[in-house]
Image 1: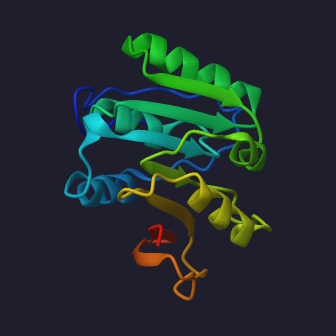
Image 2: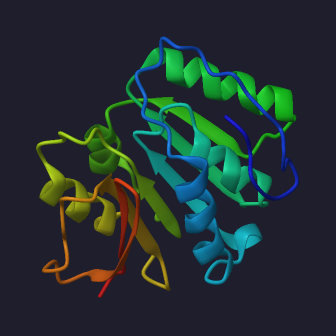
Length: 177
């Protein structure tokens, strides 16, 4: 894994193979962050990364100067890995929590400016995940981005804002009403 932009651009990490993750490709990640750079003031953004895996999205956001990241994954190897990566980068604005995403969303009381979720492609509960994320988003311009397989579409959702497709990956953007 390589960080593609920001302060840590070019840094490479070798994540443990025991983390069951499907990392976002460099091409898709770079395209996503090119879009976000025009929409977000990173140093004012509180971010939530759900189903975070090896943290490609979290690490990219940290590299670009995000105010804070809450990293949530149910796998203890993933949590250990992101904590090690943050130590290597010598950053302290990331909180890593070992929890199922749904449990975090139910208990959370802090709104986020940006929520990114990358559940497994066969995830059975997209509608409740979308609604849970929208309830946890800051109402003053917050955004939720869902990464999923390109064969799914959420255009009919009332909070749908836009979608972008890169190969097999699709990012759907949602905004609070």
